[in-house]
Amino acid sequence: MKAVCQAKTFTLKNGCQITTREACATDAKSLIEYMHQVSAESDNIGWGAGEFNISLEEEENILASRVNDPHKILLLALYNGEVVCTCGLDGKNRPRMRHSTSLGITVRKSHWGVGLGRIMMNELINWARSTGFITQIELSVRTSNLRAVQLYLTCGFEFQHRITRDLLIGGDYVDCYAMRLLLQP
Image 1 (spheres, rainbow, N blue to C red):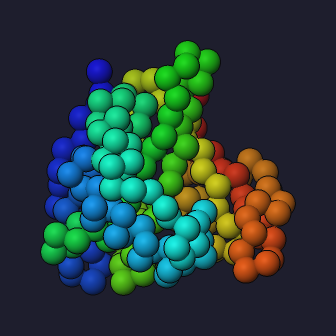
Image 2 (cartoon, rainbow, N blue to C red):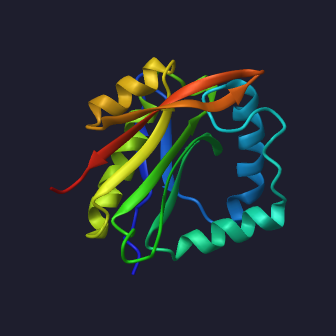
């Protein structure tokens, strides 16, 4: 059975109020639009402008399959009804791997630096703990994305290793750090 993640409202450092909730299939259209926007705003994610090529039907199916999967969650942060952040965990249900999950987060540039990333990270970490079986969260982050690296460190993540030539952006190879948070000893 999947751990529940209740909708919540938070006030950001800039005074804006956002609502967080789990994504569902009816969010597919707005999520596709959001992904196109953030991919054009940042080189800190795994796809570039125009590279998020998922159809509405595919996105609906992906979201619908996540809703009942106890190893996966996608949280949205909404400001005035618009998606401004996604933060998700993607785990596996195989017995040897179910303790571990991968984290991904994107934030719309208009909401950088106002505490939204920390709120979403805390919500996901709390959700992972509530499952009773997820004991580690893994992620990769560009070595040059110092703001994100600092956020992850203050959330308790530790460096595992450097991944050289992990991304190819504009013809240049980019290194990333593999990081991990242990939730239980």
